[in-house]
Image (cartoon, rainbow, N blue to C red; front, side):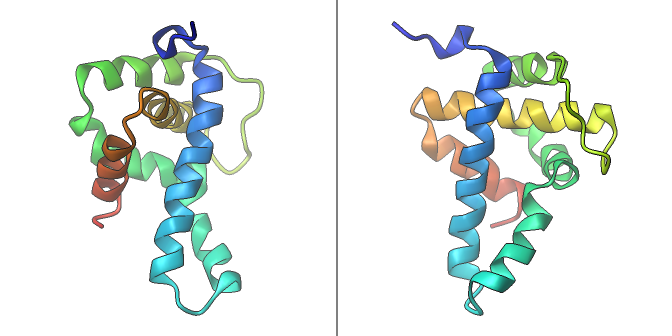
Length: 123
């Protein structure tokens, strides 16, 4: 049986990236009545590694001990690709954040993910 507690951190981040993107799209769906073109542009202020690091600074104190452990595992996982727009350290922090969202998703904690996302953006 699959155990999210022992899942590969990069795979948790891979899934968490999708979960984060879904929250962003849902928020923009309701907040941007101008339509898709404007929403796509605004989405960049939520989905880049730099934006995720800013969000992390707001919500990291809210992490449970379990989430903090998942975050540290994700942050400390070596990655081969780093976007030129952020430092390797920032990219790793964003990867850790995504790992938390992926982990919570697999643990069926969607409400917790929503709570963290909303706290990050004062929703």
